[in-house]
Image (cartoon, rainbow, N blue to C red; front, side, top):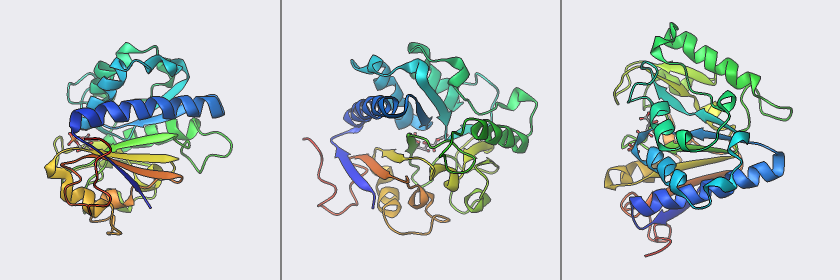
Length: 255
Ligand SMILES: O=C(O)[C@H](O)[C@@H](O)[C@H](O)[C@H](O)COP(=O)(O)O
């Protein structure tokens, strides 16, 4: 059963998730010597990274010992301002001492690869990073962050699209309703290899999606309902996004 934490507003939510991420990465590094984190695009996901860059405890994380992945990417040229990688670098990665060999952006459209071949290339990069004890062809991500669309999409898994039926770990997405139409995305099976999945959403426009995502709805129609970690699933919402949840779980953590 997913847990739900509600914060007063979007700004406090981003700060609180940044603090939670520091602790999660430090705990993972202490336990296993390294950490695998999957970043998300979108406004809230990028705001979390910016708050992390500014967080006093930021450098409690050994940034050279973190593998950084993406849950999805817009299929645009490298460096394009709309790429999730571009936003993540500006918000955080350019401000911490990461080991570039362990930063794993999804291929860009100027790679010369078709979206399908780009997806296959990323799947191969994921497979090469697996360690003994991982589940299948994807590393056991310590934490995988997801933004939430008003239609309950996560990553680039949009309701009704074929990507939701995929068993492969990475797919090309065409005809995405959120521009740009061509994207790359981890699939639900790949998301589920994560120890912890955090779904992060703010704003009234996400309230219905959050309610549906917490139900046992069909992931083909409500993709976020299929986004579950194998140890923990956490919804971190602001009060507005929690507005359609029962009072006993939509109580804010702080006023
Ligand atoms: O590439 C993307 O657009 C994101 O991966 C997407 O899944 C995003 O996280 C949600 O659409 C929420 O976006 P907002 O937080 O900006 O509402």
